[in-house]
Length: 404
Image 1 (cartoon, rainbow, N blue to C red):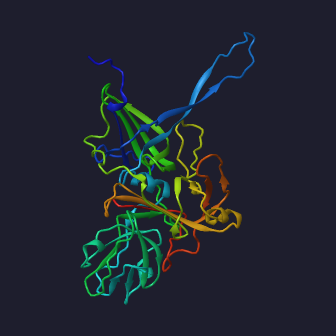
Image 2: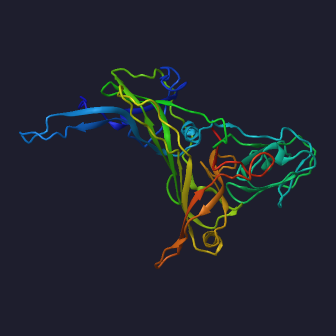
Image 3: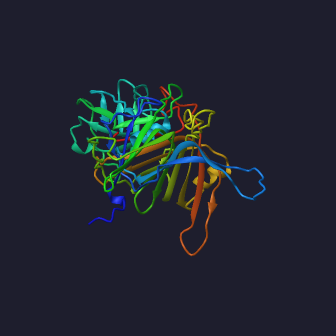
């Protein structure tokens, strides 16, 4: 016989996007979201009387404005958190660019690895940090393999392979070859921002209790990429209200995704378009600086207000040479690209992100009877030199998800 106490393994986190502010998501169309923890909860401001009384006691205490806050934590996997990532970026994921089938594309075992004699990779929209896959080559090893772009020109692209050394076989043009950005990408746009609200539900099936959190936005994302162990994500959420019930709100939600969990040991890290040395860890924070505000006559706030999107992070790496240190010493701007895969397969599912313009704020070294490490915190800035016809996006950060 059950103890009647709610258990975490029987709790489900469910969610769906809303049509807009004040429009709770429909009961159909929800999804179960994978998690290691979800701490969403209703909060209320409180007020205690401050009057000075002859009986020396407090005579009143009131509860005020309602709000929702908490974190959704999980182990990072392709496709699983795409909606939350897009929410904080204020832009949806969109299909990656492609050359379309071309007879003028050739492959080479040495850089540049892909060339063409007609058309333009830059005009097509390929960017440094994009992960691409090819199809249509005669050599099977050239097809359906994850390659990250490290250099893009009109008629040439240089790549690194996500899992292992580049294994491209030289092949002349002539076949119907297609190069395409795998999956979908999302960036912080320069205009046309999406205002994405979510409805989240905690369903406690063992005690038949539902808590539904409405008008929620993702206020911050924190990614952690350790050298050992699983990569993790934490999404901070802010919302306006909660409703309760004794039956699940979302009926027949889609099951959890089944994609593999990402580990930073499988993948690539580039600094300035080149391998970033021996990196031992990395973190990334995307902070939407959201705010709320109380009003007279209602115990529910009117909205969750957007702020400037601020992106920062940190990498740690073994101290091998002056490259990373001197980015700080000389205040040299650089770029960072990360890609993590779910396995060692050539076409493994992945999540990648690129920061086309960063500045390093320090370069501290540790000490001891071990390999010495550098700690490199950085701030990402909008890449005002990027955009159409260039090799980088006009944004602060871009994400690419093979299963978005």
